[in-house]
Image (cartoon, rainbow, N blue to C red; front, side, top):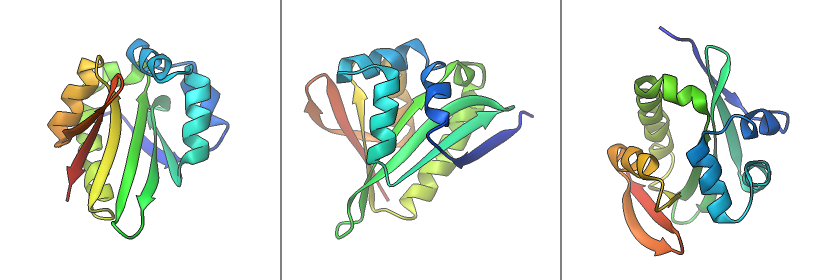
Length: 146
């Protein structure tokens, strides 16, 4: 079985992941208005916590949480993935469930945004239990509740 490691991200991780993002993730960044590097820097700066995931020491995913409301106990999750995820789709899916369950143990609602044309990401999010709550330009705001 492949070795999976998740650790807290540092700024040094940003260019490593920016250079390896899947083409659909790059397109999602561009449709949001910036390239991968700028998107990751912005996500890192706005997040309360950012993690990176490695599979067999190769960069697989970078993701962060932004606490949107302490009083209503909600957070916004973002995630960008590399070509490594393509090689380990089932493993990535299983780890995603564990991470989401951990987030839902901390927050009553977790939100995310996804490019409406990124069908694979939409399928993955729906599989995790997210549902569309509103449209925002080319993006859907999705949520999952505890």
